[in-house]
Amino acid sequence: MMSASWFVVALAIFAVLVVFSAATVVRQGYEYTLERFGRFVTVLRPGFSLIIPFVDRIGRKVNMMEQVLDIPGQEIITKDNAMIAVDGVVFFQVLDAAKAAYEVSDLYTAIMQLTTTNLRTVMGSMDLDETLSKRDEINARLLLVVDQATHACGVKITRVEVKDIRPPADIVNAMGRQMKAEREKRASILEAEGMRASEILRAEGQKQSQILEAEGRREAAFRDAEAREREAEAEAKATEMVSNAIAGGNAQAINYFVAQKYVEAVREFATSPNSKTIFMPVELSSLVGTVGGIGELVKAVRGDDAPPPPKPAPAPKPRRPGPVETV
Image (cartoon, rainbow, N blue to C red; front, side):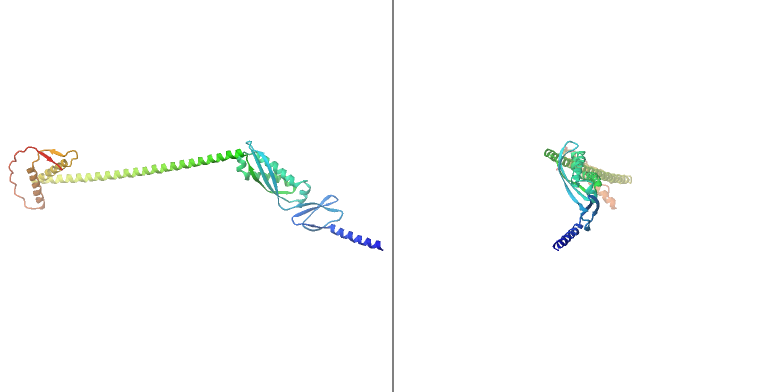
């Protein structure tokens, strides 16, 4: 009786163990591979699943979330024989759990080695300046190559990024000197261009000034010519009037004309800058008579009665020429 009860207890415990071994819970973000007698059968999705105890077992637990894999630093020789240290990072996601579990033995090591070798290949075919300035191109080429290589393993490479590129110290110093020289060159070019623009503007200003000055001289010459023309016309008209007056029997007109020229000549002698004293015979009585003739002419022009003919003046006594000082 006791042995039968122990048997029932043992059977119950065994049944509980069988039930627990048959129940499997898959976490979110993971997929499990199911093997039956060591052979892959199916993939268990997240949630609750039942398997055959002692026949089926869980093979691999595959992480289906996007993962990040660091690429350790390594030294690479560029196309122009420069030694640089490079490290990077790879973002990938498993799309097929069965392929990721059974197509490659160590998925993480495979991705790391593929990325490392292709990083050497890509950057080794470029010059140092290109490796420093074309990171986007390096990342794109690495992404294309590594993604194609891991496609058979059910993995999708989402991004490949070069984190850091460290040239040697002597190359860094040379690059610093090169950058300084380049900036000084740009500053010199900008300064020269500024001076050139300044000279051009100054020349343009001088050109405009000369043009305006020439136009001013031309306008002044035109006005001077016009004034001389009008003066000549007035002189001609005055001469014509004097000639008409003489032809009409008025002798006072010629006296006016001669007196005007006489006075102008004396004025020019007086205002001459290179002479202070003039020695010349001057008949003052003749000058007074001339001025009187001018007065008679003005009265005749205004319409007054004709004056009686002047009496002949007595002949002046001859005088010695004396100095006439001008102030």
